[in-house]
Image (cartoon, rainbow over all chains, first blue to last red):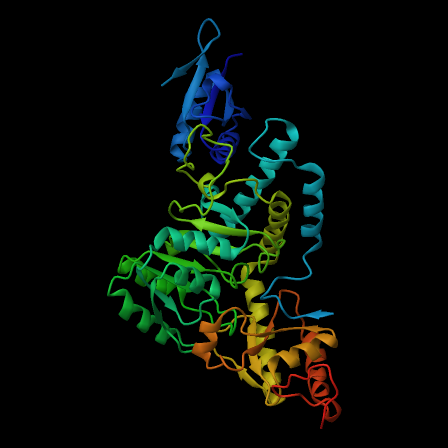
Length: 83
Length: 385
């Protein structure tokens, strides 16, 4: 199963994001942001099932949860930023 | 011991609060730093406290910044809004937590509303000064000396009308008076975690309507490569390790307050204070009481120094605070700067029975054999009379 990473500047935003997604039935585990994805240092991410990424983005935006970027695996399995 | 100093800190703390502190010391490591279970659990505990506070005060969790106490929050808020030499308006009942930072900034302070228990006077005086566009307005929700409840909703409306940023000091009101952060439109509301919110000492909350200017810089677990503090909440206001056991205890305190009900707590404390005020008057004390009063009553004896009274009551197991209560401005407004007052501050579990026990002891503090020594340096020595 493809897993995408939604990165956040603040753990608090990640936590609120997790709450928002969980209410919508999307299980998003929180994890430390992998180093290659971390902008300007450390942070936390939510791991979102690939097929739920668009729904997750919409939910975060409509609930004013600020996230940094969304990364999903390309066909080779490398994480790349997606709009 | 019968405790009537809830204005200083709530005591005893609910059992759930004490257990929560112990649990945090046993289970939680540093939140927002590691990715392993104990760190993530700690982070979740901290977030749950933010959520609980956000629900109680009608704001977003990220608008809740943890502080060491209310004073810490007020300093951050004041330093954000007020620059050296700028003009501000404050109420006549402010604590040193407001006046000292302003003094340090050499702010030009205008005091509005000096009449006790008079919202009309407070509002009229504030509006007169707000029209002149001061840099900021700062006012307490409830006086820690006299229990006077200021008309914060109306003051907030005036500030919004005249577009003056404002800070509310909720030190004595958080947990006993309704506070709706969103409706008030405040720039900041500061409160201690350890008074009406029943949490441990060493905790506080600053509700932020805008980005605060940090008092300290340091690690936040975020944007680590940037030499600057993050430009987002709550990280900007929380450098270093937060007081995790305190915050988890505060979470339990907030839950306790929510279950008991803020309105119910406030009504009870007010009722107890009014009962005490009436009975103290019957005993011949000069009591400061009025219509707009919360769970705090200040009073003065006919004879003797207020500190001696508090000491004698303390020896009999009754805990009251005497003196200036770190609020000389309030005493100036109330006309008690020379004498100070004895302060009785009620809590959610203060009972009429406890108050009756105190009242019965009052005349015994004033027996012939141990007359008060007025202005005497002979404290502890035999009465020469």
